[in-house]
Length: 312
Image 1 (spheres, rainbow, N blue to C red):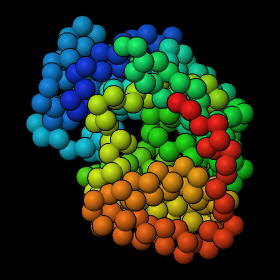
Image 2 (image 1 turned 135 degrees about the vertical axis):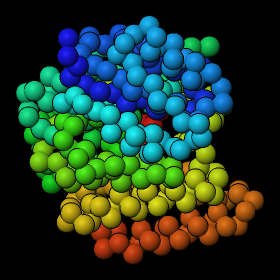
Image 3 (image 1 turned 90 degrees about the vertical axis):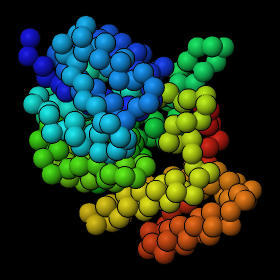
Image 4 (image 1 turned 120 degrees about the vertical axis):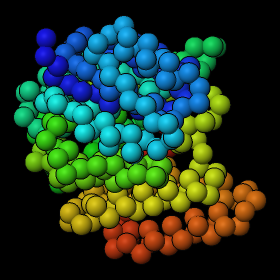
């Protein structure tokens, strides 16, 4: 049975979570896949977990970095080994829903689009068990209702769905597309390039990934109180907007600005107000000034509906 999809699965120090990610691949209703497991310089038992998966299931291939190189580099290395018509990404501490690959493939078969983006939910620890939450308002706005064969001009709110692991692409879309390396939030700019480069794309409201929120706060998205992470974060946000502006898509720029004003800036301001390093507030002020300097800023306003119903 020839594989249709290659899933690139990077992880660092995820030995406690990777078995669930691996099991979510093996539980797929569509079994024509292969997966490249990339141990990015782990110092725990991640390498052994990946090796065990490959020993018991030949669809898994393992790559190992002796030193951590980051998600961007790990994904880029994985892309080099893709020889299937379709490619997707799964972080090794997250889980695919059982029908994700089938939904993605059926959608692209119907539409002929370059990629499809699905909805996702956060998964948090409650009473000793990880439980998925509901689809957040900004995710729903990007992925619902189901739309096939659209462009960013037709659906500018799709630009809110920036995570690499919510999408399945035709492999040829990645011929000249790679992730930034040595930075956090590497998928922001890549996602906007996917939207602007694609002939057309699809969005589906179905949940395809459960995104694990680690209780110990060690995931990258939980480190925004650190100045280097803030720098990577704001640089990625501005870089994504730059891609949209270069493509001449003012509606998508306004959509991104509205989301940033509603969802990103308020928690960053709260952190800055209590941060012991004044450089944090200075960096955040510079980011806000860069946003205000954009011509589209005057026509963007935070949407209270994105936060009013906010829940995990």
